[in-house]
Length: 107
Image: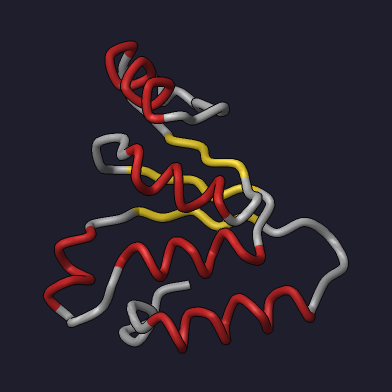
């Protein structure tokens, strides 16, 4: 989903809940995440990640350095954290951050 209001945690939570209502299957969320953009909009990226982890089995991150704080937030909500990486170094950082799933991009 790509909406200008998606960075608002309340709106994001409502969209996730509606997604859950539409299926009895597992749901995952992928963040192409730039936390500074959310902060500039006056929102808390940690809250948005927590909302995703509440309704998803897997929360995946992409296009930022692996961050143990995001992984902890995801795990605290009972979901799995995954980080797409493009190098062996990135995979090590993601594993050190606590990710159990590390899809590797190929070129």
